[in-house]
Length: 336
Image 1 (cartoon, rainbow, N blue to C red):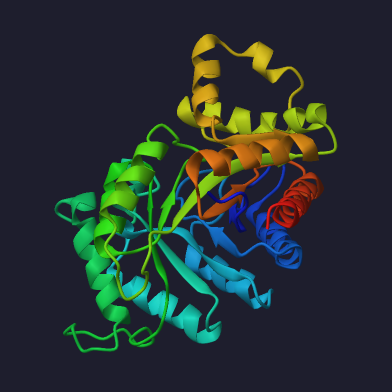
Image 2 (image 1 turned 120 degrees about the vertical axis):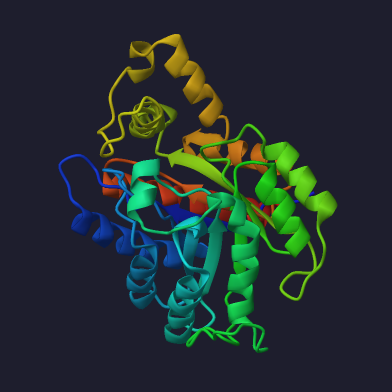
């Protein structure tokens, strides 16, 4: 059983209330540079559309911006929502990124559109059966990266390049597909933890080795809010809590500032929603976060953790990631 594993960063490039997308992009690059110094393994950005609080819609463009401003950390998509795109276009985009930043680009693929139905139609991807084409689209995309002439059309750049592909998921569907294709699997336990343990079991039991991966590899999303004290961390975490409730209530917006006593102001439905979503979270002082991280890794036997921290104040968010990195380093020394 693993006692500590590599940490990575999932950044939604959130737009805080009173701010704008330009500032979000500057914050994302600043976070990536710090994460690189603190020893995080990879820095992923997620595709969302039509959401007032998330600026990473043009994900490949933002990946290029972050990769150009860093030197060693892997940068990638967590993920690209493949039903929105032609597989050839994604192969060309990520072939371009890999050509610019060789050995540093990851491509995580999701099955959901990452938007509402009206926005999905506005993206102009004309698929008859939508998400049901996902396995075929993944296989087509993998073919474009192959050095063999398997496709009537070649991705230039893209063909013959080694861009690691991940399958993302929040249900058993993605676990089954990742296992069948022999690809690494990233589960969205940071916002949809209900089927996490079952999905991990399904993936590991059904895994078939591939040219990319010989053994199953599971990365799990985890909400982390670390601060000097438990009280400060729980106060900062109310921004994420408000954002989750607003989103699930049909009121998506920019990331709100923290609100003292927020949990006492909401009803039982909202509290139950947060209890479920944040069941995969570590919130507190360094000692508290260390215990919670150890317990989570011990429970899941994860191979890697993808840390996400939606904190209103950028300096507080940096401090949270710095504390988390220090906790991970200390645990790795204690349990080599």
